[in-house]
Image 1 (cartoon, rainbow, N blue to C red):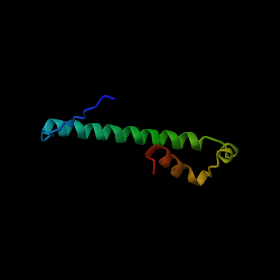
Image 2 (image 1 turned 30 degrees about the vertical axis):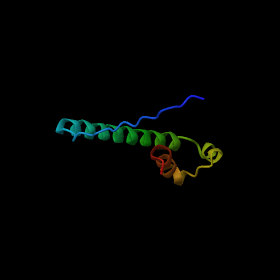
Image 3 (image 1 turned 90 degrees about the vertical axis):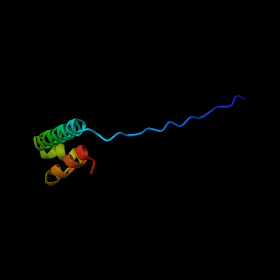
Length: 75
């Protein structure tokens, strides 16, 4: 039986530069905008379904926004 050695590497995080923080902030905004667009698309698509189609999916028209939020944001 061969012995395996495990190595642990320590990662030191340098303080983020202003440019790094700006890029990170824009990345966060972009992600939030994309999520918001997906939410609106989901609401629109569900709203365009007939009452019968929504019933088949187990969704009430009054809960479309809640269902869309759960689908996109996970809460």
